[in-house]
Figure (cartoon, rainbow, N blue to C red):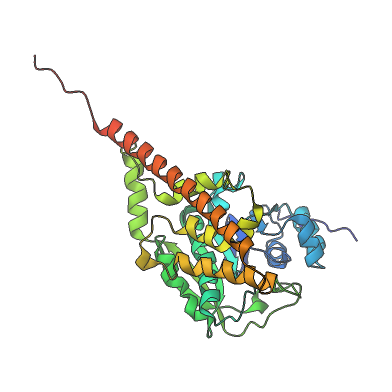
Length: 346
């Protein structure tokens, strides 16, 4: 049976709960893309939808039995489909970096099954994921756009405190509404990780949190637009993003990045932020790497671990040097704008 795209000849606006066929919508972290299909079916088109997943296409169709069919349906509806998109780095994507959206949607963000959901370090990993998403999404909104995160609200999930994370990136809560899966016919929530990624997870109490840019952020954006000659502040996160485009060039041992991946992600996402705003420390991320190595090597001598730590130190020194040069470059640009030749008296 061939899927035929439904045409909306009269151009009438159609709604699926919070989402309109007139919205430019970015869907982040899609599982089997069934949520995207639900919206597309309701609209009769998906020309306004960009649907993305962290998984590659090959991994996706192996992980979810309905994924291939869902992607075919979305393609026939005219959706833009992206794979291998990291929600914490999505504004660097070649396609997304030039786009702005009315709605950016992330349903049930989850960093993976790393232990008990109530464990402190596990909660910190989830918070790091959501923080990175907000950092990117806040700069990808159209005027009056909204960022939507659907999230469990029972214990221990409320410990993520996503409202507080959003405020760190000039996003303020517009409203919080109960999530009902029946509002999205055909949507199947998926675990996405672990032994049974294609299985659903119990929803329990959950809500959709809607965020908008705070008035302070809007005023700052307007001010920069009116004063194009004024030098703009370039935060350290920008430097980390530039560094990440050529990730850790001196590191020959890929095992180092695998073992200490949480540390690297934390370092790139937290630079320039006050330690008071961070729920965890560098030492916590290093501890995760140590525990991973120790578990995989089942108590064997730690000679290999010591070598990886030395490799980590080498990469860290290079990163510090890179950031120092970046800041000097910013200072030079700022001074070149501020210093003006004095006028001679007639």
